Image 1 (spheres, rainbow, N blue to C red):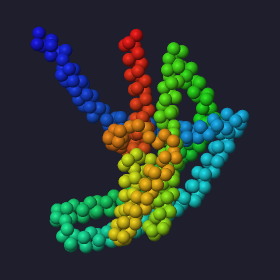
Image 2: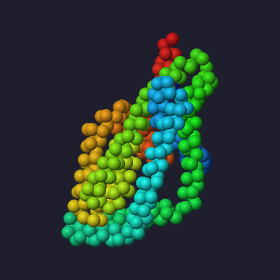
Image 3: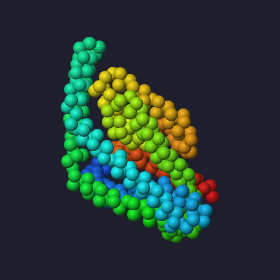
Image 4: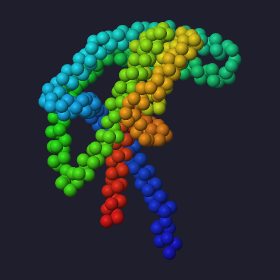
Length: 358
């Protein structure tokens, strides 16, 4: 009798689920090497399609707006796409060479910058403000950071074969994005054709809710990141920060990541400023502070739908999981993917509740 009562208790259910979770984690650890190999292959193959989907998703509302004003869809796609390709070409021809030159110049100055940083830390250490163990830890961290920066820059400049392969793969992105934009409605109808008629309305509502949750957020993040990057570049130019375009690129790139992005984006500039003077550190921190205040109080309120109504702790957890699974790409895509899965779960839960009440 007691055994039957225990088997029906919540504690027994929790124990069973706990054992199942542990078994799943154990099996996942066993097959993880194979999954990583599959992931690397799929990442190389599907990355151009994913980027093309994001580009077409961002540009689709503009194409639909022109198409709604009696402009043929193909002509609207060509017009918007021509403007987009022109902007990207101007960016690649004018910005990328400057970035490459600044990375190459930074690579040559890493030992000198490290020496300056070491001198500043020696001066700071001699003041005896920190315990000896903490000072030794800082020195070891600086040495490890110097080695990692040198290796990363050397790999980036020497891995020409990998860069050529990457450029070749991503050269097809414009063509993929063009046909996705041109035939977006056709793809939607083809996908819905395979959905049973009784479920078609529910699937349409699900896709509409996902688009409503993600659409303005994704498009807004691009605008906000670009605006903050431009502001950071102007600020770095004013204070005389070395490699301003490179440092501002980090700010714009990491701005895509919620909550943690502004801190990660400001870190390279602060490290660079620390090799010059404490005054430069304060100026760099002030530039990033002004940029983030303008972003929070001026730019973001003008961008519709920036908030996904997700608790900050949940976002941080999702970012940690995404970063562990897919690195930098995981950090960028973690929050939108979680928001989409949240909408799917809400629809499944509502469907289950309706089934239970009928």
